[in-house]
Amino acid sequence: ATLMCRHVASIIVKMWLPVYLGTHGQVGSAVAAMLLMYLLEALGILVTGRLVAGGGNDVLANGARWSLIAGVVATLGCLFCQGSVLAAGLLGATHLIAQANASNLLMAYATCNCSTAARNQTLSRLNFLSFLSGSLVPSVLGMMVTVQNGSFHHVERVLLAAAGLYGFAAALMPR
Image (cartoon, rainbow, N blue to C red):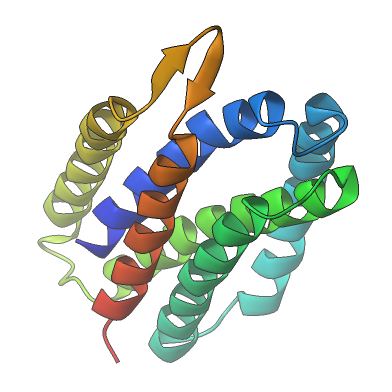
């Protein structure tokens, strides 16, 4: 369930954050903010991978939990950027790093906690359910968005739902 919530929230933010930034005038240059996000994401994933390499189950679980919490904070923060390309870029990058780390750490955690005989089946099922939910739920939630006079409305509601899913996923993590 944690993987599914994480995947759904990630897809929602990736789909709707650029729309929100571009249509609500929150950022002077949505393109510059997006470029900054993806540049920082690549660097952040490399650094995080180096930091948690070789960690045990506790490191993986705590890293995933904190990544999900960072996803909540970054998603909510993006709603309040108030015209700053730098703020939108940093918060967007934080989200991208958090969602990638949560996914990688959750899969590693699942791998460590599966018996060797059932590992392939379990991971295949987890991936299938994660991607299935990531395809269906964002589409359904996207139906809340309306277009009037060439402008998107209610995107912030979809982004709030994504933040809620990240929080729910963090709450579901084993202690």
